[in-house]
Figure 1 (cartoon, helix red, strand yellow):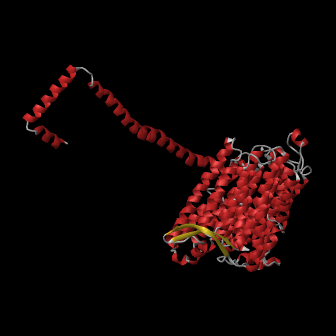
Figure 2 (cartoon, rainbow, N blue to C red):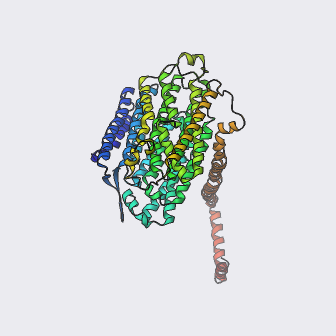
Figure 3 (cartoon, rainbow, N blue to C red):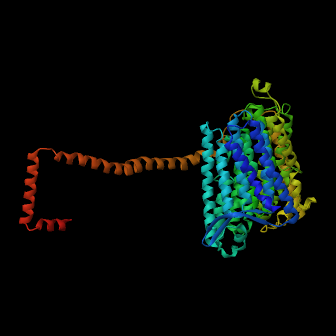
Length: 635
């Protein structure tokens, strides 16, 4: 069955080529079918491979062709199918398919050629992410890594006539290039030290790396993960990525790009576990990001911005799990987060669709009756992300918190604080949007309606997954066997054992769930009847303006770089280099103009110059060449 692996990325690639090359001749219906069927086909093959891996349990590497071959180095274009990649394949293609189906209705107002262009970009995005997780070496991973960066630029700036959207796309692209440089340097370091980039060979020869090598490589790889998975300080691009269509936000936040950093570290768990410094650093950055972005989400009024900062926060929890050695917990949270975050973004899209593109939650309210399917599915997503049992987010979040408690008690305390803020801002969002009285215009209220079936069907499927998706990771303390842990154990070999006695674990679960429930009740009581309609004041203003981090970056990074570039452009290039080159040309032109005056055409002038030349020659002859010796001494 593993021989079929090449079909998984091939189908989206073919869909991209058909929609991209024939975008001016395809109807919108046909473009949507081609784009969606391509991902569905990949999902079916991924499902077959998953059950094959589950049954046989063996890792398989399938080389397609030699990609790079030089003296002492050969890198194949090869795919690796194992427990970790098979899980990610299902997440990417399964949720990707639902987002494609949703998009066929959500984007129906687009012109045919733009509609096809949109689906071509979506297919290319999925293809790049599949390449990233299927690669059998760091080079193929990096190709997919760069591919998702390109596709994020294309999709965030999809409405390219809006310069603000173009700016957001460029911001995402440039900020990711910073992280990608770290990945690339780590890749060169690995090849230089071990002479290979293949996972199997690298992880089998880690003993050849010094402590300095391991720390440097893992830190550089983490810089790449910080950019791709939006961790402090390279996180500001992700909230601005909301400029793209809402289904794109769901795809970026749930199934593709932002999970790349977690996948890369989980894939390299044997390498990362050798550097205690890097692991501590990852945990701290993840925790700080989780808390920092949660504070911002509390005061955002754009429905998509709340979810965007929520994603940054949840990614922080995943990195906290990775840094504490809970690799399975981090991957588990990637999966459950993919379910409920895709649901929440698509639910937000359904609300925006009903509200005629209004995104300010202060102008909503009372949508519960008008959008019953959107309401109940959105509510289930909010409960899941808040970590309320038995919803999926409870199991994955508490596994990370338990690992944090075993690793460092302070990590657990701060993690619980972040979880409480998550529950609060999500139900602030839910209450302000769906409860209370409608606060929009009369025209908006008159046209409120539930979304078409092509949009509600993915919501229902994702809601079911958000409710039951955590059942594959029920811990032993709750009577389960944590099937996901056993499934991933052959790949995540460096997982740290976090032994906590059952009474302590029950206590930890009880505290986190109780505090989250209190936060939920407080948010519902506060915002369902009297939502915040006024502009924030004081510290709330700071949170509403995202701690002014964008302004800080603009002041200390963007403006100095622009000033420096203008200096080089106007002073160094135009006045310096161009001035010197143009000056030589002007000097030659001026000299030639003056010298040509000698050629006057008058015989008398020529005779005078001849006589002057004779005088000079005679003078030199009389002095027996002394004048030349004097000049030679001077110069």
